[in-house]
Length: 555
Image 1 (tube, rainbow, N blue to C red):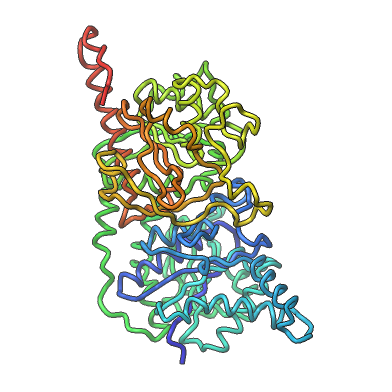
Image 2 (tube, rainbow, N blue to C red):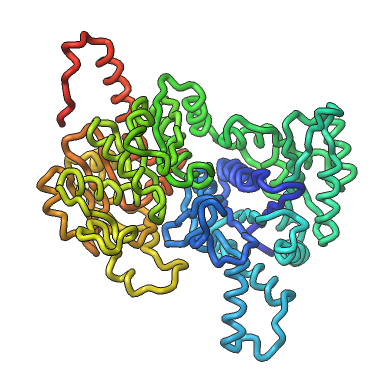
């Protein structure tokens, strides 16, 4: 008998219904009942991982502690569960086929004809059960990417069908996320799309056990009965998922709909006490009842797509809640910033964050924004490329190295203050070859970074090929831009702070990838506090007589 239970989450009718949020919300409820839960994502695209995908194509690339470049849904899983994921939590069709073809080349299949069934489906099933076979989890939730009926999803649905038959209905259930649209002209909710979606799933051999129905309006009991009757599920297995004010409301909405109880009943597992969500409710209370508000400029090159900086946005939600502050995140495209409009665009902000990215596009705008923040004592937070742009700006405008640049943008610069790491110069393959995953960083005491972390040793996640050129370190240090965080193994600079500034920090790693509801990232928390102080300082300055407004902040 299987010791680990498996839950599959499929989607129908439309994409972007929120399978990741539903999966994370259910996992949160089960975790709050005392179960050991993890979530994995099966992505049907041919890329081996999303590491080489443009953010416009697929949103941000989420990096795990073990250096896997994964789907952004893993960020939701970690933010909800406060548990790290790994390479095993995200598998693509490209990875499946690569592994099978590698085995075929090695002669593992002993000359047999390699086919989708059984070889591809067997590999999918092996991957699905990999986490369950560790003995670390009571329940494994598997989100199947794409929409039922898509050609690329067929091998995954077939694998689910086989697992349901192999493991039995009490060890393996399917939750189908679907849509019940509201037709304004008819003034009613329509169930036909859901019925056809379930019919499509049935044609592929899978009967869903639970239907989670996305809707703009509440579902009546009569409508639930209709859906249940025509989709062959029990009435209590038709779950309303109404549009929520925040993704963090969804676990409580699912609790109200008894989704966790229904799941446990179908898996023949104990329900026990009601889930303890006190900390979650406290977080939501602070989130929805802020006592203050700040404006932060998010400066990047992919700001048109919200998902491109998803983890950064959610980190501000977490940090804002801690500070009982609403963070109004103003997206500013770095390509639109120039010398004529920089003060207009940034003048009303309480802080700026210059986001990570790759390539030359928008670099000049980022550098101009950083110069404005440095000269006007505006709180600044630079992440990865954001730090590198701060180094270039400082080198040009403080050190007088007018040609200073990163070799990513200008390989022939006379002053490469940011350069490709030596080991990266030998690499030709692009996928999965950056400096990836969790790395150690030693922080200097009595610095803002140390005061934020309350620790001299930290571990943060990385994703980069370029790094600060240590040949210029002494010049930076002598002029007040100090390296306060160093990797002990490689001596690479991880954190830089500008001394004579209220809050000016750049980091080479990605702190946004470790911020969760239960543990908001300390740098984001402190940055929000610094922006609040800037807002209050500006308000006080505006309220005093004109002759007293000449004070300049010096640390």
